[in-house]
Length: 411
Image (tube, rainbow, N blue to C red; front, side):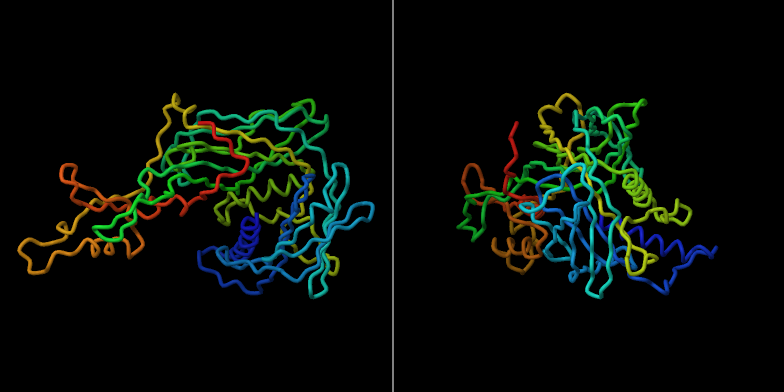
């Protein structure tokens, strides 16, 4: 969300710079104002609630300045206060043993910066949220980001349970975790041509976790529908990643939203999905629910969200997809099987390089890793050394060897 909020402000500046110009040019933005960016989420889960404070950036690729000297607390309608402790990088968190959100109560975020400026969010009631009735997938197609290719894959959907009989607004987040296995991993260590030792613990199976950055929201309107069916969560193209090669899991979280929060997320989604052109729908509609008490006219970016949450997890195994005829993932791996004579010019006075020199020629630049020796089947004489792209030799370079505590192997 932080990157999305920073993009909103960058687009605001570019839009202003271009608003009186017809001929394209690269603007030099003057009068830049550093604004406070607030990113916070409070739920009814017994977990630490985080509020991140940064300053806005002038360029999208810049690193936001972290606000690390503020006093931050959350209050309820009864006057109870929960102070958030700084954990670094502008992140402030609550103690879950002392403070947990309760559905039906109203909460307000308070911020005081080192320069004496005070900020306060609008009071927000924690509204109830219906549960997730079902998570499922269907075979589908989707264009790639540049629309150059129509991809085959799976689209994951959720159905909600019956609502409360009133207008309800929802938002979803998801976290993907998958198990993957390398096909040409490092199995030996090269010491010399006479001492090549097998690796005791090879790194061929790992897990990878990615949190969603997409913005997804929906609503339930009584009389028109009492629940929400087939809300799309994400699309997986098996040809583009190793997510579905072994076993995949997705955790979907469903949050309750107020009408104001729904409008914020909906407008932020429009900005995030735009290309940043001045002819796109402009981002000035994205407003914050945080106000500066010292100067109510000061612009603040971001949102303090108060939501009840329900979550469900689903697993997908590679075996259950066998009948769908989906495309396979082909890792971008290069393999070489070479020996010193491959690099010697016949008739040259230059001596043939040693096996050790051959090894270092491949691995010293960091692009390739040694994976195994190849011996003559009849004589058991060393014939080649095999090297592969380094990312294909060790799964820990892109994932984790530690299996998540909650993971259940279904294969």
